[in-house]
Length: 392
Length: 157
Ligand SMILES: C[S@@+](CC[C@H](N)C(=O)[O-])C[C@H]1O[C@@H](n2cnc3c(N)ncnc32)[C@H](O)[C@@H]1O
Image 1 (spheres, each protein chain N blue to C red):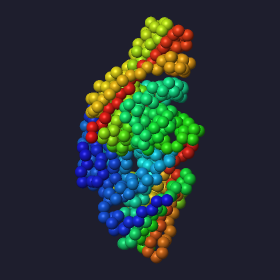
Image 2: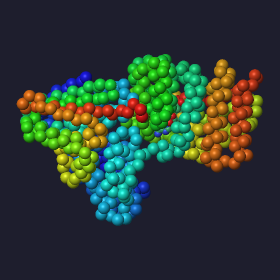
Image 3: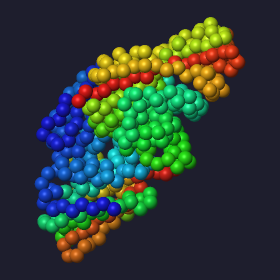
């Protein structure tokens, strides 16, 4: 429902399946009465619930004390009046004020719990936020940049644009963008505080100014609509179980006429010779492993469809291959070593793979490294690049 | 530093002015922060509570002067507006509550009373929840100044 009679744009929804009442938008009414529709919707929702009732304020960006008081008092009344009821409030770490503010509810009743929505809600997030992963990302960007520098131009990036890099990781791509394309504004967003700390440190060390590193959830960004000429999201749609939701956000923050640029992998197409068969086997298994954690490392060629179904026009797609023959075979080998470390290490263990499997799985990475460093060998990692224009 | 002057009557002609002004100023001051989005959202929330307080409790006529400045890690918001002795007393009482030992308890009490929030709730929130330093002073005979000093970003985080 959308509230009427108020200048504030806020909405509420009730999901019966999850027993969850969600509030979103900006809630700054002058009088509590302005919330009466919302409060009665809340009452009606609770009436049908027993056990745990969820109140989701993750997308509530602003809220004044009038609104807080009205809603908090209602929640307190509910748990006091109904012995069978517990309330779980979910806040977002991105909004800043919400967790601290709602936490006072816990002090008022032990039937209310307040928790911050965090990484564990994302499948696989704990892997990508891991500090070991930083090394993977650095080496990867180093080798993909020589290809992307040209491609970005073809996909419409020009100097002086308003640019956002969503899921920026450790921010090295943003630094390269800043140097090469001098955007007028560059926002780089990620949901990993450790990656952002690293990114800010690197920018400071290199004396690079003007990159706005912000903490946020790509599925739910505080950035306003229609702001950017060029929005990039690299190697990241593949870490979400529902990439179309992220794409929707990228679409939203992009200006009409602007472009969204995504890069994605299809890991089962990694290749190498000699020892091609073992390499092939292992990368097929990589795809399965990611799938087990609800992530799709095979998205690459599906990017075109995702963009078209996401409402983009003038969609273009292509691919390039990072190879051991690009002039830095050791760099290539380093990437594979860090994959081995993560995939045949933590991730395989977490899935509960047996030692025999892990040994064979790891062998394929070793063989890929062998191919990369072999004087007559060749090893490759293909990447799909796609972009689309948001209609005017 | 950034300053905006408005006629208090114009400001109070529409509640949404609190929201608009706080969002606008928050955006203006959020550049070059550790995290501009997070900062802007916190700043807007804090400033909005101050403006809503002034919207509710102010003197008859005159200017509302709103100036904001940054001093290192500290952000200072200064509001000067018409206020007679009674109005000034409302602010005085709120600030006195904050300097007492049970400020937090008073804040929670104000937060969980039914009905229209007490005029001091916004100020209590700033003092307790945002850790702001609040001061007031008289300006001439019929005006007052409300200053909030905030540290919204923790450099060590
Ligand atoms: C595979 S990495 C890619 C990083 C970077 N684009 C690159 O190419 O080096 C995926 C990134 O997505 C980030 N991420 C995961 N979930 C996120 C979310 N909900 N919002 C924003 N970023 C998220 C992770 O922290 C990680 O940095």
